[in-house]
Image: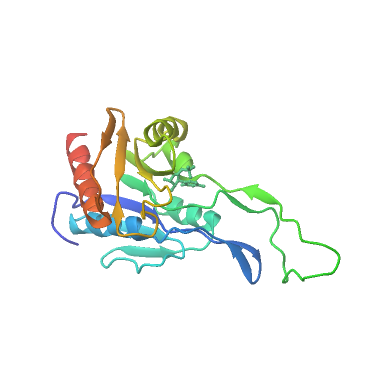
Length: 221
Ligand code: C5P
């Protein structure tokens, strides 16, 4: 482990999308690349943290120097994240699927002449909310992300309250921003102190700033 201000701190990071199986060959996914979560895990490790990286099927390789748990579904991600506790900090950067199939078909759903299949959904566990609202052993700092397309600050502020996390890193993923899957991000950090809009910068720089801010918060707290 590197030497640095996060030495001795254990930090869990969720990252990437989840895949929710429909049947043995099909699944529901989303466009998260895992880039921002991976950059955050790397930046935390560079500052000396012991990082547990729980990742869905991402497009980018996990960083060096962290413990990697690869998962597929939201429920697997939840179990791996909870199993990694206790931790000083949890950062939920994953784009967790909100829904899974109410029932996964055991065999491939066939195309038939008598109509289209109907998919019914069940709600996935909310990992960020669950960890934020732990009554015992809650991490000192819980950080969530909010991918918004409208009213970024207002929606993210409401999300922070609803989930019970300490910080929300909100980003504008409107079409045309090139943020989802891109190398840059423009984030607004929402905390108890209010909203702080950061200029557009690379996801690596966003990650380093978040890691430094976490080191400062732990030092102060
Ligand atoms: O609920 P929403 O997806 O808008 O909130 C985003 C934040 O919540 C992200 O930090 C994401 O990682 C987290 N989340 C989660 N589990 C879910 C859904 C979202 O941890 N099932």
